[in-house]
Image (cartoon, rainbow, N blue to C red; front, side, top):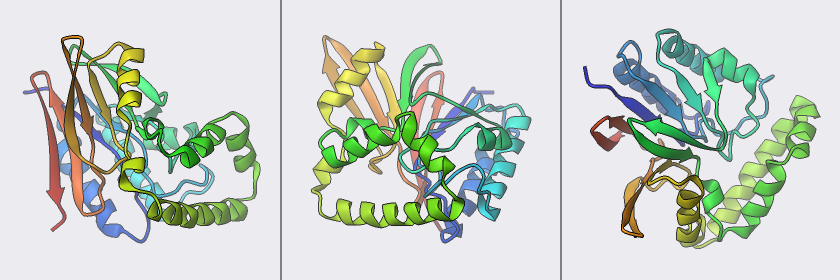
Length: 245
């Protein structure tokens, strides 16, 4: 049997989009569960919002149950935080059978060193967001937020989503995309030629020629209107987008 590893990102799971969660559960049952898959990597923005591991909804509980079944069947599940779920902690990860990874992690992908990340840190033209990102990923901000009452965290999350929508509506689309200099710097920092990330909702495969080397950057798609995943074998990488029925 051909060895396989799967990558997904930007599902933005929420109670008001049951079609996305249904597509995700179908994806797990069709491609992952009991299929002798080497690993499943979730590269951030898995949930639309995350206010803390102490708030388990019917949806997040159901998601955890499905992922734990995958993990218990022998396929490891790995998670990298996105800009929507960066305060997820070990309590929920353990509940879902997931292993939390650093925001930039190099893996050995069938003898190809590959850096995996959510990707938002490479959108360096969006200085407003980068300033918030620097603060929110510090040691004190998440600790402060998680110390707040749950009702207050929900309020902050609602306000942040509305502010984000308004902010993005006023920005040229180029500002919301990754910057080549940041991409090439990330390749160089990790001394790799392969990269996989999400965040931009622009599924595609990009190549760069640097010092006679070919660098490959694969961008995962969002799940707003499709199921989007990357499947990698020892001999291929295939980005697949399946429109919702």
